Length: 149
Ligand code: ZN
Image 1 (spheres, rainbow, N blue to C red):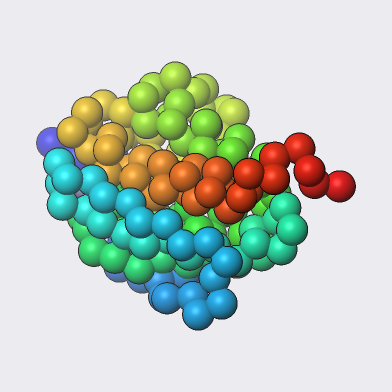
Image 2: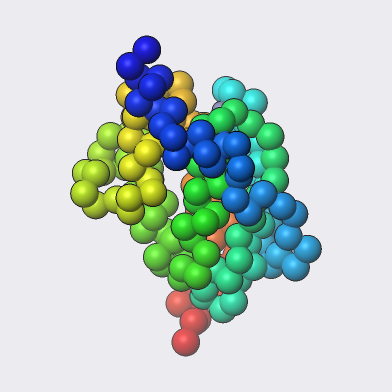
């Protein structure tokens, strides 16, 4: 049970119990749905973009503790970030979940998910919100790539 205890750290439990930004955003500029059929996790991510910056982020959906805590933490972390900064976080989290990113390179809040890398069937739960964010950002660019000031 060591994997489980490492995985379900206090911070993850807390985010699962009281998910941050767990609401429908009425004035979202980007809405993206993500599904992880392996576990049955599903979520809708809402972003309000202010130019190149994520002014606000929230999510709704149902899923396991890992997917919910990950979405809660993700939406908290990316608020106020630019598209490029958010993309860096996406890459860092993917690296973390697959054991490729060094702990020292990660924002402290994400380190709680390090244990997921040792539970292959949970990796998809953890990265769902981040994959969805990645899609949302690509979509929100609206093909105007390279056109920002
Ligand atoms: Zn799951």
